[in-house]
Length: 274
Image 1 (spheres, rainbow, N blue to C red):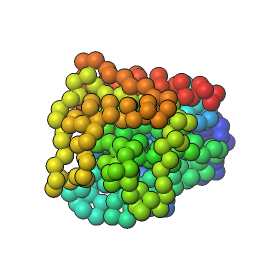
Image 2: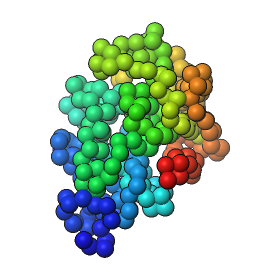
Image 3: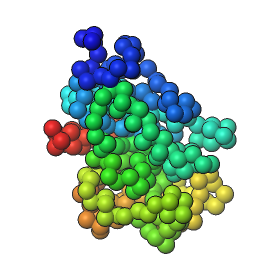
Image 4: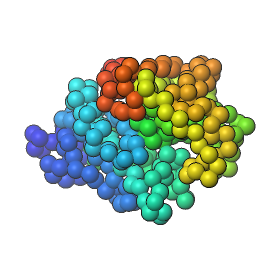
C-alpha cells in the first residue's frame, strides 16, 4: 500500500485524487449527485457538512480540513445540484423530499459507499450545515436521529418546528404520510445540538403564499433567521435537548465568522468518541 494512502483505505483504487483533499466523486448509485472529501491518513470518525444554496461544497471542506486532520475525521461534503428536474429550482434538497427524490436517503447511500471505499466502521456521524445546509441537517436529524452523533446548525432561513398542528415543512403533522415514518422528538435528546447565528443576520425573510417553498405556518417561528433559530432553541430546550445557541458578534449571513465555533463544537464531539 502506498504510504500516501490512508492506513484504513479500502481497495477501491490507489488514485491520489481519492486521498486527503479529493476530487468531486460521483455517487455511483445516482451520478446526478456527488461529494468531495478530506480523507486523512488515519480515519476514526465521519463528519458531514452540507452546503448552502450556492452549492460551494469544496469551500466548507477546505475550511474544515484542519479539524479533520487533527481528529482523524473523514470529512464528507455532498453536492446536491440546483436545477434538478426544474431548471430554476435552487431549494430541492432543503426539505429532504423533492419530486420523488429523497435527499436524506441519498446522503445515507453516499455514506455507505464512502464507508466501503475507506473501510470505516459505524453508522453514526457528526452533521452540520450552513443556511440551506442547516435546513437539510435539522430535518435529516428529525428523521434519522440514530445516525447523528452531534448536530451543528448555522443560520437556517426556514425551520421546521416540532409542531404537530402544522404540515411539513413548517411542522411535522403529516410526516408519516410523506416519509412513511414518524418523528419522535425525544430521540433528539441523545445528540448535542449547536445553533449558530451572526449578530447582524436579522434581515426580514418572511415567506408569502406563492413563494417557492412556502408552507402554511412558515412564519410562525419568526420573520428572520435570528428569530427562527431562537424558536428552535426554545423548543429543543423544552424537550430536554443538550442544546446551546451562540450569537457571533459583528457578522451577518456569512459562514467564515462562524467557523471557529463550529470547529470547537465538532472537536468536543470527536474527543468524546476518542
